[in-house]
Length: 429
Image (cartoon, rainbow, N blue to C red; front, top):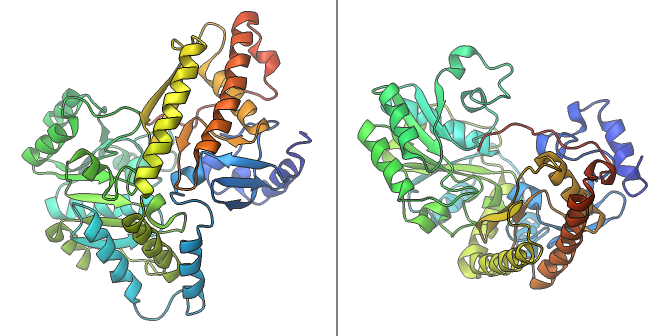
């Protein structure tokens, strides 16, 4: 048992007795956090910082899987939630926050004319697929990216246990930035496609007007174009990636940054499609829960009145410029590169003849965690991050790169690692 993470590991042993994997989320479990080098339980967060149950403090570049955009315990959000808490969290009638937040989304998001709320991103993507099928009266769905845990999507991945084969067969993948892969699937399933759903951007930027071409092909087929903006919404621009890239889908789904970490998601889109929600069943006891909606209203208002996105981009550019400089200095370009956009960038590590990708990522986490940086390979920035935080991150990258050069020289990564290497969860991108 690691002394640094003693309490975390004790908690994990206890949790596993009642909770499969000891966590409610795969990405926060021992499948992605190797035992011996990782904390497993947080105690609190403030601004850009998180503390684990052993008292270790981290500059957090995961930000609750990109759900935190303003910073932990943001005073504006906390004030709004506290005030609403005194009035009540849920009632026997709808609450005005339901339409107030919907109005904000319609003000900010290009495709949004009507809005309905869920609690998780998976609720929203599943709701969008259901009304797309109702609207087109067709069944097949084409997907690109990650879209949640529900049967219609997860059945298309290697994590398809428990999903009926008939459901699996209704979902087909196409490849980002490969318009021919989409054309081929449309030809194969022509006349039967209800929707094309995709993350508008992830690791790679769209090339050769890819998003415009996807929209054109989708509409030519008579299908509904859905942008899954669970991550990109309120991060790339106030109106999401659709505003950033200037391509408006028929429907879009939002979550994560919508309420700075409070559990709420949204389906938004064209009124003639969204009108089907008056008949198609998409209804939740907690769909109008007011604490999360108060948090969403405060978060969206802050985005409208303060330079949140501008600040995140400036900090992200500073991060990427400095990191690229270090990669060049250490002559690691053949192994490591930085991809994505300043608001959400990725450290991509390539397998070598002296270390697997999983070993490299595990070593990265080992060093980052030891030195007070909580990072898993992405830089999920918030409004609370400062250049000082980035400078500290770069100091730890220096430690990581120094270690990598030594490992490359001695071919000894297995002796450097203090845990078994990671095993990939499943590949979706």
